[in-house]
Image (cartoon, rainbow, N blue to C red):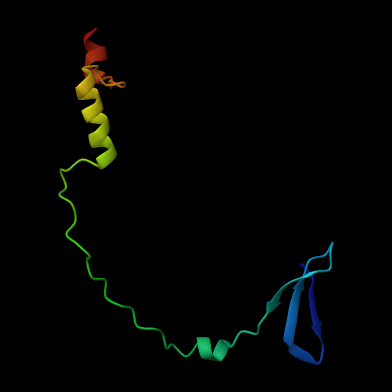
Amino acid sequence: MPVRYARWDLSSVDLVDPPTQAILCRLYPLDKSANASGRRRALETAQPESTPPPVNELPPLLRKLLADYAATGLPPAYLPKHSDQESDS
């Protein structure tokens, strides 16, 4: 992307779209000495909003799907194969 600026004034630098020559955005100088000072914003301590759900509780969508299968009486759509069953046959 081409950049337009005046040699004598680097406080005004624009990023230009080549086909249309439209100014896309203005670029600002980076103050490296201010960024290198080491002063950072203090992080806020995270406060838990509520207690986490119990580990053994099922997710809501899975609970709904299992309830739907139980209501229809049909077996689940996916039955995993066990490797010990294959060796028996």
